[in-house]
Image (cartoon, rainbow, N blue to C red; front, side, top):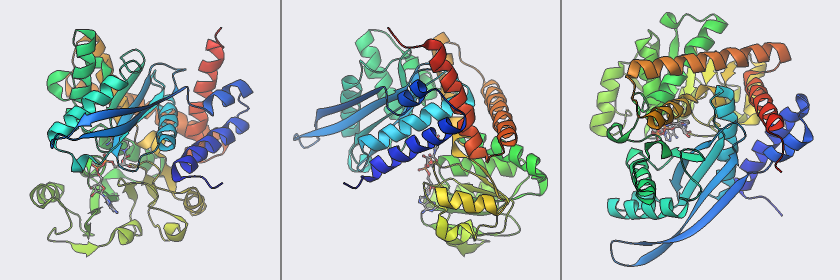
Length: 418
Ligand code: NAD
């Protein structure tokens, strides 16, 4: 029987874990535990719609591993999401938190729905009921949700409020990515893009590119791409191309990031930006540049276009933007790829910092948050690079080795209950 897309994705993550476990000789008991998710919860729950009809929605909350600490992972609202996809994303979170060496495991949640087709009131009722259905499985000490595709700070606020009502007191640390007014962290919104910028500068230094002279192309001008583009421009890089779902713009002399952001705010897209040539997303990926940041969505660089990529460095802002086959081609062509489980961990790192602030009810200035983020990411980058040299592997394999060594050691130390 052929596998569904969700099953294929989870199978892919499992194979990756398996390959690296083989390479570093991880104990069989550890490999077997990481091959499965510790807990998979499916809930079916009713929501009263605005027209007074009732619809039943399906949601999931999956905890892949909490060997290194409470589980952490976003909640996705999407019409096509499946349990297997959520399992794969939960496993990836386990790896990401281990690479960053923050004391977390991995989890993920989802509701099958199209949030764009729901009114704000329907979205609130759906979120509160979903939160109530999974309330026994989440909590500051157990499993901490955050925003993902289709969810946002307001949804995290409703989750925090619903959970708090059950406890009888405010529990800000139950979710991260919340609005500042109720225990969100300064710097959280920019965190993933900031992490990409930090990773790009570290990688540029490693391959001998001077940031002040570097040319940059960014695919996707959303939360990750727009922030990464701005912060790289602030560091002196020349932003020569950006794109979004409506198309792209290119100017080899450089694009003004403030004017681009204003264009996006005014028209909802950067595609009509003046003082630049129009290019397609496919053309952007083939531009000659120093740093390419794919920050839109998965599988953008594939076997068919990988040989045309002319960037010197790729920083994976999006999750899985490069397929396995394309990755090999890029490696053969001498292009350094900083993998997603390192390059886009800025968000989960600052989520961790938000949780720490929420637990102690002491909130920090943005400089402090950004300082921690830089320190944690710089250390992780150095560890991955050192492992890549020692093991003679690419950075993606090295990041998985770093993560799995940490997980194997935590699992062995904790042993098996009873
Ligand atoms: P977003 O929705 O804010 O932005 C996505 C951007 O991609 C938008 O500008 C959209 O127009 C653009 N886009 C869509 N289709 C495109 C196409 N065909 N070509 C070019 N651009 C296209 O999303 P985001 O939060 O910036 O997330 C982007 C990616 O980064 C996703 O893969 C997400 O899973 C990953 N990611 C995000 C975070 C985070 O904290 N936001 C953290 C880790 C990973």
